Image 1 (tube, rainbow, N blue to C red):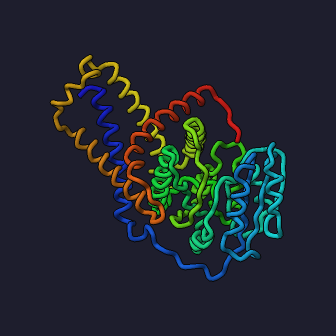
Image 2: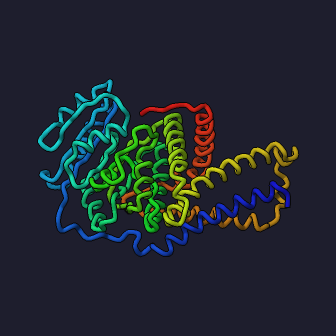
Image 3: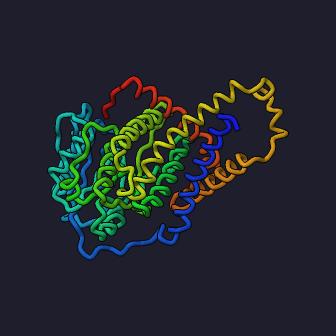
Length: 394
């Protein structure tokens, strides 16, 4: 066995391990997957913090949806923090100001700083963070709050989704978001939720006293706070029914910029919390964090092997592929087939797990091919920007 064949088998077994973990999690916890929790006997006061920077395009729709949440108004506090916008965000938001909703303005300091500014002003027992380009469903709090009956739960993530459209790009992202929700719920069963998304993740207010506020110099502060909560041995849960719809990037360029930022910030965060790779931090430390590094390494290794095969293959293979007609069945073939079948099965489960989300078949099948090229683009761009040490601001 030469080095190329050894590397190919290494990637194959890594992929096999990855899909088997999720398969076993689903088999073990499928009865609890969509379990309905009892409503709380005493309702807590909830503060909703909405940081906004140049969001005049979406802020009205966002505030209308937040004000429509089904929850006693005397137990609701809505704080809009304008982070030095240069457009009409502050002016538009002021039109919604009321006894329940307060609009404040501060100098531009980034999303983390805006969230921390709001946390200091919040009076709720629970604090929800809300992106200004996202829209919660009316029942969002009724679906999230019951998770806090467990005193060790410090945060709960919502079901962030994208609305159905006729755009191929948006529909591909919609499929991806459903896959993320599906896998995040499975990871919550082993206390390994790695991120508290900006669109309406909700926290106990006391957690910020215990672990500190949001990082103000971080590319993905919603992930960093989740890792910090995990590092203090607190629990994060995930809801499949607390629907929040967000505005996705509308062009390939915007999508790549978003994913490059997520990848850059994510790898930096995992590197910062690499000290958690030990048994003291359970499955999160021994599985979740190492798998992120291994997955990135496997991706670049696979990309390198693909480029190598293109340039090293003989003429007839590159341009005619006649050798595929005599391809034999090997262990590598069997592993690859199994990984593809299980991955497709999980994709099917993800898009069918949500009764209100009807995804057309014509978007599901091309998604697999699209996602590979998306990963190819943002991973190489991420590497390039990191090597350049390029900065970023929201």
